[in-house]
Image (cartoon, rainbow over all chains, first blue to last red; front, side, top):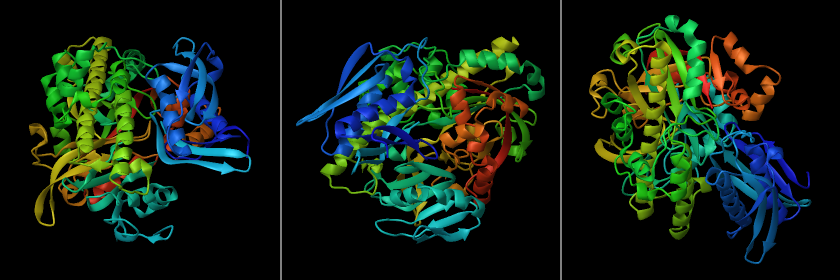
Length: 139
Length: 482
């Protein structure tokens, strides 16, 4: 297993992915990056502004689900695209700091419409290399 | 037929029962032919039919249609009717794209007349009908107008000049779900919706020009205004970001409700609340508002299509004869009445990837179709076939007035893309007689005909099972996709 990054898993109708990270903060940041990699060509997104996503929820599964939900809203509600993400955990939960810029139809290519992050089959597991998460995006 | 450790019982050539096991409150029922079963048993769809049977208040069966495939919580192609007093409403049983559906416009044109003029028409339709991710609609909605869209549905579109009274009358529920409350829709959902009214979207949504090469039921076809060789327009779209956000918002509300009320279910995505609870009622009000948004969206798309035809062919509306046959959703939850154990009962029917199919004589069907039965439209694989069906009495007995909704995916998007690597889908489709205009080549690759089950096999099953009857086959000649 890779230490960080994501790969697609088979799914008939939607997109199922597996994300790896050394610790939870890296896993969460990698998951946000993966979401935006599937949404748009991240190489064309400039790191012009930063935004902060708060991590809340009791279990790692809840935390990841709520975080990804907020991350998707960056694009769907605020038309903001993410180039990179960095996570930081603390006692009250933590944050994921994202860098990116507002969506510009003339410069950015959006790859697909992601309707939502689903809770169906969402798991976060500890593995010898760190942490791994699997979740499904409704497209 | 075996599914993991469960033996399915064959009830007929088109019906399979999943016996009650574990916490299932009712058995499962799948409509499919024997040949389809290996595909259906391959992923999690059957498990999901079984999980739905755990929902409090479910009546008779948890049902799977022949186009069933793996969803989240509910399978796509699932139907579940709930007792109104004891039962629950589940946003996952409706889906993210609330009231996604299909509408068919007929015309007085023949496909033969249209064919040489298709390139110009398709280019114009692609230009005038907004599609693809990030596209915005041609209507700038003000806040108060959006409230009216949510409250009044298609009626708002007609009063704003985007449709006729006949369009409204020929839409399921006259284009307006009762009980809609715009205040039950979050600000974020409204924001997502405002710019997207009158947009097709992406993925499997489309606007298609079809030929009618085959008619199976002359009487019903004639009632619907269809004839052999005719050119018609089929539109598939939904409630766009507004609907997705309503579903997403209420899944959280329902998860909290379940925690408070200690309801335990095998899948988090089945989150639900009792129909009679404040949470359940509020979701139903938001669902109705989102459904009205979807009706209005398809009305605006149809208006754009009609206007484009008039402009390209320099015709008057009477020469074109482009009238709405019907508009019907396939992601809904509705209060309806059925006979259960000899008694008439009001129930809430969840249809997620399933189409309402009411039989002749049903009071909900527009008067001109009362004898023929409710029109049902089943979009198929791009470039192959789509179908017009009619509701029949069997659906009231067997499937809570429901039938299938499409072909159903067979291949994952990654597999589909891998299988076309290096080939031009546009050229391949042209070779098959279909002109394609698409905002994204990637989407197009994911939507190749081979990625879907054979829609003809799907409609043959619902026809043979007696939960709809075949009226006409449509053959796409041009497709506009997001």
